[in-house]
Image (cartoon, rainbow, N blue to C red):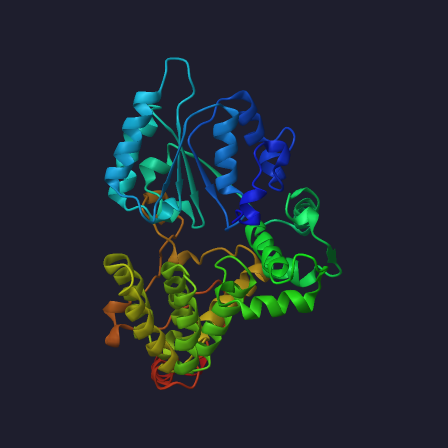
Length: 423
């Protein structure tokens, strides 16, 4: 059985590499480093299928360094230490440091990342980490400070066209087949800028036809093949975004059954649980908001709990939060309020802070009336006193308007009691 098309076409040199011109194009920063043979420890951050693993292999091949690979999914601290020990034993005086490639480094725990620090700092290994998540959040600061972070982008249409042509004309198996590409719209759309996904879809379309028959690639054929394939869900492709969109819209629409179905689709498809949890936090603030402030607390607790208990039990926490959010009353008044305020800032610019609201830590500031005539709310009945808190140019502006949920009606009634019709 032959290797998958994506593996058969994996580039072996920079000249074969497609895309990421800002990093590896002629004269680009990473290309210059690779060609000079002097590579710092690196973290590649980008969506799936854009060449992170391939670039790590090319770097090791170019600088002629031993190459070790670990997957954060099934490697522990013991595995890291064993690889570092091997790297020490294979390092010769003037040779390049062995390359240690860690796929999905964002899944490494703090202790696993800590175990890398000394080897990276002393140059025992050149670390290359790959992550689809923002390394600022997922990689510990001491390790991040010792690495250069390079951002890889989804492949553009022109890159996908080059890759498709290469597959049809250079792959030893495909170039022997009769393949006619009539339409590329669905092929490129479903690939979502992911080279591996594009080649997997092409592989799927070709594999379903007899070897002696002509294969015609059309939008209809590609769509049908993907619908027939239950493993077509891809964490970086269009279906990924379509399903998370359906999930959020089901919560917003107060349909717990639809929301839990789309959650199940993501869980079955191998979606990153933290990605789902982050979207739940956003939904709690954006779509439920002040109608039920506890929703945001629960969504945050869901995110924290996931990191504590892991998988597969984490699916239960996601389900509980999903149902709670879907069945909560909805309000986007806070979302609209900040957008209204931002629009006013864009329109009016940097208006000065009224003098009575300014801080006055020095005598000079006090002489300039900073803080003068400010009324301290707690010195008054009900801890409230009327005074202007906005710049005079926009005084009496209204940004937040309560919606019809019971919680916001209560808030609105209080504001009217305190401020009168202003609020």
